[in-house]
Image 1 (cartoon, rainbow over the protein chains, first blue to last red):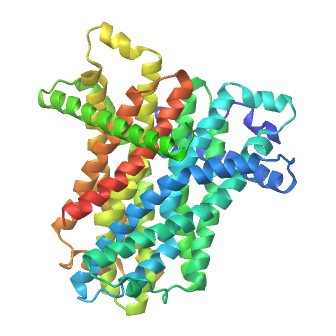
Image 2 (image 1 turned 45 degrees about the vertical axis):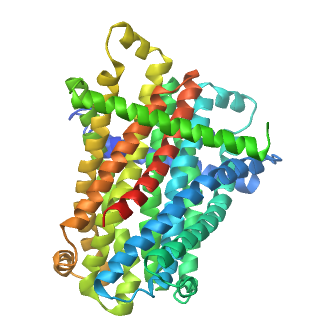
Image 3 (image 1 turned 90 degrees about the horizontal axis):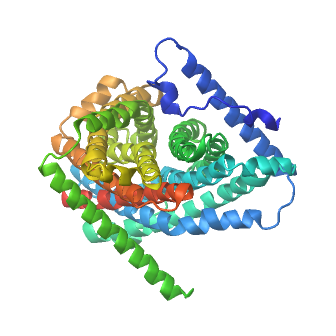
Length: 279
Length: 257
């Protein structure tokens, strides 16, 4: 099973597959082959990671290290970004509401609902896709091109078990934690903006009446889905790195682009499902 | 030396140093732009590699973004029963905020990171010194063309993404909410949205482009320490660019209404 990654594979990022790859006109369906092979190999990483999550070898401290790397070290970056996002969105939404209804006291409850259902998880995930995704792909990619991954295999340690599993577990946990914390920051800065620019009392603004179980469920499902997708796609990009430092560079780019696309597609899928199933 | 205060001070000095270096780089790029001191062939190559090749991801992102905007607006639309306002609601968010923002984040992952990796590899393999030895100014040969490439790419991609996102929203609103595309576009063009909203988004895209070009070029040039150094530079670029995008978004949002 684990030799899927050992033969030279056709790797192509989604932009090469969809687009004008330099191959020319004679290799017509090659983008389709590349796309299916990309999907198949990502799927192989997914199944093997899930297998090792259940019955992997115990590695004391590995998950904790990754929790620190992925979680604590992204905290400041995420809080600053989400703080700005909170100010911008409340300001824009306030202008938007003022154009049709002069009364903006509903702003807080609508904003809180949007934040819980979508904004916190999705914007955080886009940030994490750049920071964590690039980090995982660069780390695993440079281990691949310096043959450290082959050395792991020689020691009978599966790279998926040894490298991907701790990052996967840590990312699923930390994406949720970071989303909650950064969401609170975004709500706080939004509250400040509302009181400074639209003179809405913070007590009026902090109104959770529109948030129901369905919103929380959709938001939580998004956190878990993004937290699972980002490390798997980035690890797949890193493991497919070939050919020295340029290979690592393009693996990093591919990890960021494909994880961001995955976040956007998952967002659309989960939002639509949630809208139809939970109302 | 490992206390909170020294590390805080070091972090602040780092940030100030990076911002200062980026400012100096901006000045040097501007002085060459004013004198039109740049390599034409490199500029065309950058425009093709960055702009044309990014179209597929811009298309996919924009169509899904439109769909997401409609799904998020759906509960509000149903609550108040104002289907004619769906086009306005989704259009306002897309044109002013979400279109430029998501396009910039995607382009940053693809073009910005790639730019740093390329320049960084050139630096660590001493190709920059080679250019200098041939009396070719690396700034006007490599950096200014890329600067033009990134800013133009982001501007045009945003125009493209705005249009496609509105189409995506119109055709997602039909099956999801039963709002026909005609009604949707009436909402977009119904008078509540105007040229200032489109301009607002496009000004943002130019600001993001300048920030992204400067950050990615700076970290590319400043690369040191071989192949691992290139990896660190790419990482620094994506993080700095994302922070730049949010700060610039905030400043532009408040500067122009």
